[in-house]
Length: 344
Image (cartoon, rainbow, N blue to C red; front, side, top):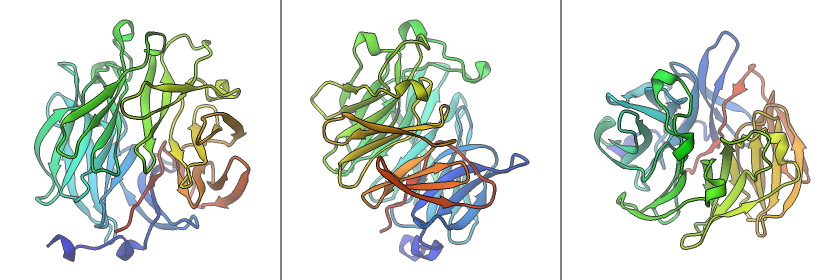
């Protein structure tokens, strides 16, 4: 039955998904081609954060921004809502999720805020997205999770304890300890790494990986706002975290957003939505290349050998040495992520 469902080609072959808002506070999931054409915009109940694309069916899950309680499964070929995911009592979503490689299960990052503990909700994508269980994320405050090429997952446990009664306030600064957790395809934790003591307030938030399994990390500093700390790190299993400084890091205002590695592995791009700035690093050594002032720079994903970056009014298609600005009409204000669709 799943093979009879619409494919991404039938949905207009979008290359990217992103959440966006418009004037009047309307909120949308938007599908974009590599040329910056809008192939669909589908309404969602309130502000979204990221989305998860099914590996081969034209289905996407749009997640509410933390501490939202909804996720909407959309048929991107017909524009219809397939299912509405509501977080269980005592849980809220963290804005991210990922499908298993076969597309049968959806995993969602969640906050069990009364415990507190990080959880990964498990939903059956073959049975109406019925919730069938949950597993530990391996830490507090799981945010982005991604599927790796081996079928396992990497989870960014940000370390920040929050509670919806206190909006987005961080409640555990004295004991905060983020980590990067790896799970195998069955959901078993197989590795973890934590920052050293002097970096424990550097929340591990957003991640990307290359074909070899190397993970690059966008960090958000929760300590002294004037402290000169790096906001980019990388990791390979079995090693310690490696942090990378950049002379323009301060322009991100201690808040790194999305991160991506170019397809050829030569560049890393990291956005700073609060500072309207993007940092570029050498993809092999991690050495700083340069930075670019880009208004409202938000999501970043691979585009050819370089990047597509959402910003005010459209997309930048390029990298550290320049690129092509593509205007996108519609008055969109993009949220933090640009999700690449791997079409099967």
